[in-house]
Length: 191
Picture (cartoon, rainbow, N blue to C red):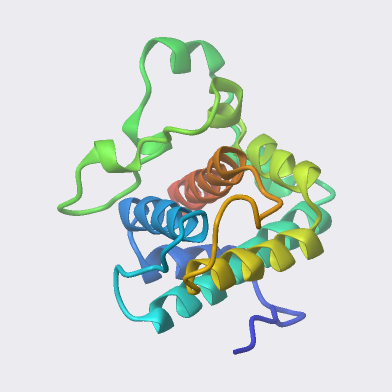
């Protein structure tokens, strides 16, 4: 299972592929259920174990793409297109186009960010930077592998893991929500 991000791969396409793989609510539930299994005395039973491994591959690709974006967008070209400039209107009325996009048949509420602060909603790159301030790319990838190992084994428990369940859940949820905001807002720019 190779999760290498090709050298010339477009990281924004990787984000799009990640949200084509599963919906926002599915991502939220999956992360929580995987962490819950890793911290319990039981193993993940929601579906086949291969589903967890496939999800691990998808989220690793997303993490690598986000890392690449943060490292390579030195001129903040896309960041300027994503950050909401009318900050006053965000506090009074939130335009669904800033977080929802053009999803047919889905409830807007499913896409509303629940783990981002107001500042992170305005500038989702802040949430992504926070994720990589907490752990480096290498630490995220190793940590995910450890979480998946414990999620798929019956001997996982919180004393065996060196992670704070709530912190990891919150950061992974921020990563996904901020990535989705970037995808929606960049798509909004296209003619």
